[in-house]
Image (tube, rainbow, N blue to C red):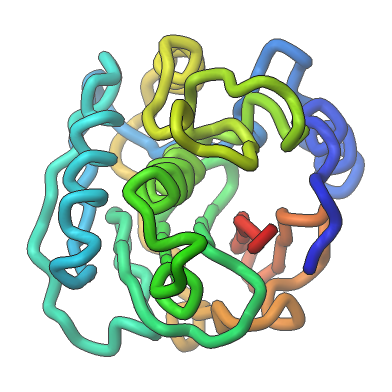
Amino acid sequence: MRRASRRQALVIGLVTSVLFGMPAVTAASHAWGTYHWARASNPFTLNVVDNVNPAWDPYLDEAIQDWDQSSVLVLVEEPGAGTSLKTCKAINGKINVCNGAYGDTGWLGVAQIWVRGSHITRATTRVNDTYFNTSTYNTPAWRELVMCQEIGHDLGLDHQDEDFDNPNLGTCMDYTRSPGTNQDPNQHDYQMLEQIYAHLDGGASGPATLPGNGQRDPRAPLAWGQAVDDDLYVASLGDGGRVFTFVIWVR
């Protein structure tokens, strides 16, 4: 069992700015830095690859529909190849979403984001059936919250609140012990995306040339690099690229 919560997004921003020299986020912000998908126009299209089984399809569909309501992006669901779902290989320029029985790892979901400079180049979301097949977490509310939150991280968002005992904020980007009203984004999430993607870039995020695709074993924190906080890790990849890992731990 992990600690109850990690520090607020402001603290993460300050720590990350010290480590990597990037601007700190402000208290009103719940971006997890200056990271974003590069694009030449808004709204921009981002493909989400469906490598989940039928039990997860409705929750992935719902998360895509929810985040697609943002004015700055269009999410397109793409059928997956269905190969090596546990590995959940990162695909350049896309979010790959997978489920699997990853074992008694302690986590419900993991979002991993590859970046070069300030641009996200690829991302994955994994959900752990080892826990979602138990009575505690095999509920629509928990499945929807975790799927929605991990994709939110893949887009550049952090949590709005990280105290499990605070009242629900009505967003999946909120820590909670009772997810019934925290299953979808709220207006502040959409406003934050508008802020993150307010400027335009020269084009799509370019590929990061990383040995072995820079894959990180999703099962163990030892493979995730340096702990920035209880549920945020970063690993340098030797060519200027980094992998950020966001974790939702079993409570």
